Image (cartoon, rainbow, N blue to C red; front, side):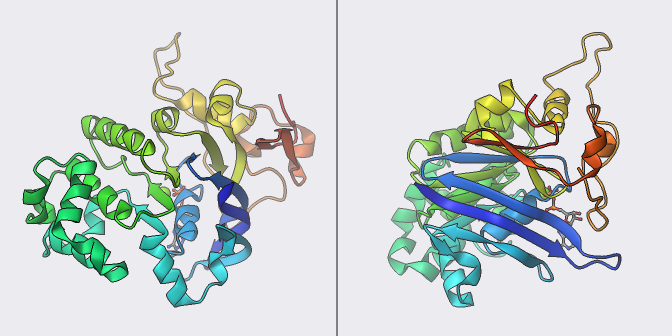
Length: 318
Ligand code: ADP
Ligand code: MG
């Protein structure tokens, strides 16, 4: 059953040159127990989509169309207090920089207790908090409750942030580049932790990343974003082994694991993402696309090569 459903969502930010169209007509379904990965270059709208999912858009951001349904309820039309109650309890978020999630002058224990207590005081008991810290792999969790955020390493802080997100047993966990600020070793550990959590967490996970390894290790499904749109989505295996959209193919070719055999260099996608305040009428990837056709200057149809896949490209499927 669909737990989280995004339907035709568009989000803009005001700008002097016209609205920045950060998210454009995005539709996605995530079932209970499923992990959805969102990939794409920087500036393609991933964080805006993630923030919209949890009703935490920046001031000025405007949802111009669409719905986000959690268990069938459109969270965008709920009154503000109901939105706040949902956040943390039914939906929780883990950010890129775990430091921003904490108050530097309060201990980990008091912050977790405040957070849990705001929703349900019975969950703020120290024994429950340290059990949650143990679950995310914090050694000596009781001692950790008395520490301040700066006393922990980045990796440990991110573990605590994940523990905080899981305290209320949310239905949906959203993680926006949760490993990007960490070094390679810490990153591997957090990926490992998230993979472990999958076995005990029965909600849905949406993970934003530009790291294809994270997708390969964690995700059931992938949505590829380019210039605010989901240009391709489908099962992770299918996206990896039979990418259809020229942008997906280019992204996969950029994976650091793929090294150009003749030169030994990493491939990169030439060109840049377009100005989201001044988009062309046709395909936004056209100027960078090696496979462009004359019709790519006209509005792009969405093809469905399989019931669980979609591709936004004039070529349809390759
Ligand atoms: P990503 O996470 O994929 O890098 P973002 O969602 O952060 O993409 O950004 C998408 C577009 O929205 C970019 O053009 C970015 O400059 C713009 N944007 C993001 N946040 C804001 C904001 N708070 N105010 C104005 N523009 C923003
Ligand atoms: Mg981002």
